[in-house]
Image (cartoon, rainbow, N blue to C red):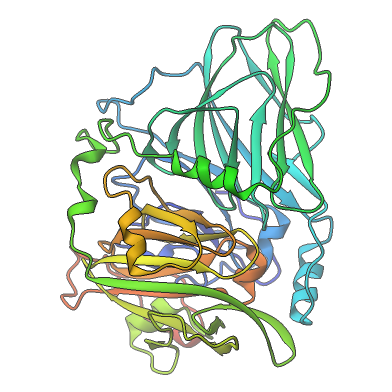
Length: 473
């Protein structure tokens, strides 16, 4: 993995890669010390029991605004069937909004307590304005892995004259539904199949912002190898501010219960809807001024980083770095925020319900490191226990990032089977940087290597953990 050199060090987070039994190298500051400037570091991770489409990005400070992201493909083992014929080629498309301002200037604006301007444009694989081409042969079918690596905007994705068959979402094979366009929220990844079944010419690949007053658009080119005509005509339009359209589409995305996942057994063999929920966690977002500066939070807490990665402090039993229980399971009902290094405790192997509540007028995007979760329900208004009556307890899609629509809620189920310190965050990077995140400490008292690996021998040690001895068994 090639690293961009930042003056204060760097971390890379693999968005959606579960890091089984090893949050030490999750690549966020709550778990992993920054890689020193000019140095190399090898992340050691296990991708057992995972397949699918993911991406990596720089996770410290506001470095994400400088780029440095790339696609990750985890392929099925040769003997495990995939629920569609092998495509002629497999392309990754990284779409996202982009600022012309340097990441240091953007960070400084936030540090002074001001709001950022809107992004200036959109990029597809780091380029705009038809600078990226994907060549196809007429009559053949191709896999496109689409990830929104941007800073804040939901993007709609479409291809002129072509339909897209959805086959995978963040490691889950889906019911194969055909779409003219797809809403891809920040941090999400989709795999679609397209067939080059149109007249031999070039076609627009288009992406545009959703839910914004000014619509930004960028294009790439789907180039037929026997093309006799360049892209022409108007860029195909997409939906703009319609949240109902997006919600309806989201509800059509479901798990293919008969398809194999990373193992040969069908994805539907685990009946999540029959498991007893042991705990409900309600997370409500909020925005407020703290000490005259803009902050964001969850359940009344705006996260501030500690001087030592939380996982290292936990391992070395360093007091005073964080306190388990510094964020509550339910909203406080207060509009104000307070600053804290928020950590929520959870039991290993618990099966929990998490309800993301959005009282604001924007579409939000939420992510949990180290896990997938089943998106069992989403709707407008306030969540109540009666909302469970509309949950999908059979074939909800399993993924790592979910959207929450304005004045709405989204409920997920998650089996806490991965011990560690895991980041729960807004995928809107301004909000994440200004406190809209916390860490979920999934704890097992056994201390067995069957539950969690020992600290890796190459673990970087910093803060109050500097000078201590790491070990590897």
